[in-house]
Length: 171
Image 1 (spheres, rainbow, N blue to C red):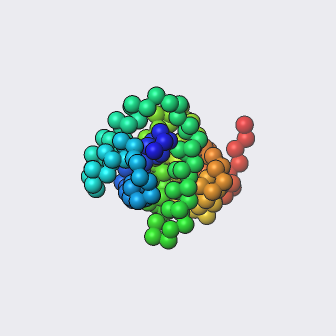
Image 2: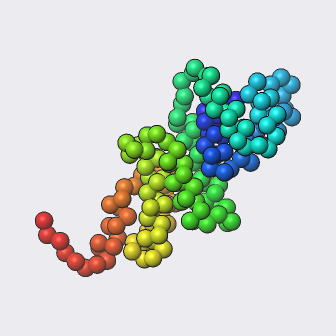
């Protein structure tokens, strides 16, 4: 298991998505004849997600290698794309998941992307539902963020409302 995989699985566990980790462990145990200690430790956790999280955190602390955050972000976007395409996942559930992922980054306070954009989609979801901002445009922004990695700020969400209001503001 790479350090990037450990970080990704840790994020997914915290967000309540453990299936990929369970599948990874099962596939590793079925396909390999020798195992890393972390795989054995995770396998002995069974389906206890708290124990698995503890094993992953310990593994991450012990590793002294540089982390390629782009690999983690790529895995997260692949997961989000699958959730977006999953007909059982509501937009509300998706943006709440994105918010949770964004909050897990210590960098979010510095408005670092993609974490910042992940958090603002949740913040503007209710506004789109209530019609305060253009819902169709909001959904297009969401789709372009997940599939094209276009980043947005809070001012872009209110742009359609300002244009619709017919109020001219002169500076």
